Image (tube, rainbow, N blue to C red):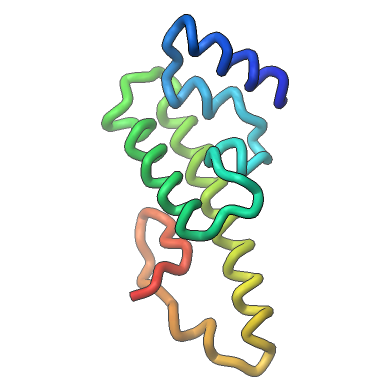
Length: 117
């Protein structure tokens, strides 16, 4: 919840909290809070936030006991934002446009969010 997150941020000023702690304190359905972006953030801003947080909470780099769960939470939020952005881009192109086919990326382990080639 928002008050809980604010109290965690206030605690971070006195006792250092990891990025994993902050992510795990977020509502799992609140993508903006998880990704630390505004609701009207551009796709590039979302990508930059995702990359920075992914580096901070990746289980291979972060020693937090819940790093895997935090990373999965981050990936799910990023994928939802990409799906929303892709749906908006496809609907803007029109039902008979093949514009959506032009930016298909090869499958990868990390969501690409429609990155231009």
